[in-house]
Amino acid sequence: MKTKSKLKLMKTWSVWVCIGLFLASMPAAAIEDTSPPYLVSPVPEPGAIGVPQCITIKVGIGDDLSGVDEGSITMTVNGAPPEVEPIIEPFYSENGYNLYYILHEMEPGTLVTIEIRAVDLSPNQNVMVDSWQFMLAEMRFDNRVVPVLPDDHAWLDYDREYNKVRFSWTQGFFSEGYRLKLTLPGNSTGTIDFKEGQFDVDLVGVISVEFRIFNRSDWGVLSSVGEIGWQVAPIDTYGNQMNDYTPSRIVRYASGYMPMPLTPEHGALLNQMTPPYFTWETLGDALEYYIVLIRKDEFGQFTSEIIINYVPAFCKEMEVLPGHWETYGNGTWTWTVIAMMPTGHYSDYFLYEFEKLEE
Image (cartoon, rainbow, N blue to C red; front, side, top):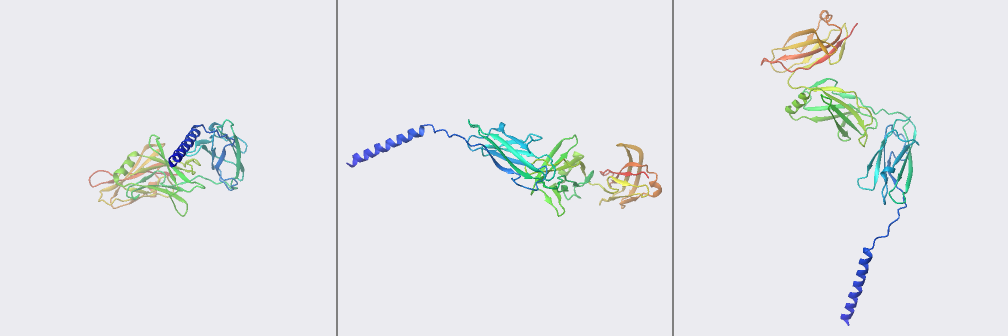
């Protein structure tokens, strides 16, 4: 009796297993998709006020079943097509897309309505038309930044810069980061983006970034490049540039040990009645003398007007007497100071410009 019951139980179990396997092998009934796509985490948030101009709009378009037809995604701003096509990128982990658009400049206090239309990939072609609103700030914010250091046409020395390459500029309104653009001779360019935590901000809102140069040979590579142009522009959270670059400033890195000109500063404007003092930082080595070379510059070409002065090694300034100053013609002059080394060779040098104004 026990054996028969056991056999009967095994047969019954086998039947149910076979039925289960049969049902599992049957195709599942198709789930009808009747739900349209939907918006995900719009930026700015719906109902936000005080939103800055030129904000980057971001919104996700998702669909849990059939997915979203990318080609069906359209956008309007206050009922009109956008001035430029928005950027549309797929989600990394979900079935949908992200849309990015930099809002064109509008009047302060404008109520902005963003409407998104999208269709899913189901046979029903479910359509979503959804929108949200936000209000721009009542005042216009200027996202531009102003370069601070290095000065235009600065010559930088390894020791005086404490072995660092540094750039600084003023803070921009609503900027989430900054893009530094470097232009090398030949107009080849490169950019570096800095996000929060990658730059310093002082108490008056000056942004600064720095790169450590660990040895003189690396600094020598910089000096061999020649003139380097630098510019900066603000960027938002997503890396979109929020305004134009600042005007280009030129910087050069000194190749070696040389006297540093101090005054007149590069670009100085000098009047007829005030003769300049030419001053410089002296070198510590025992020198023979300094040569102060002053040349007239007309339209980027040096003229025959060249003034050469030999100054003892212990001096660090040269006075121009009023009578001598009168002989300097009006216009642009270039000046430099060169050290005559005990070894008999000349030091490297910096070139500065000043302009003598007409009366």
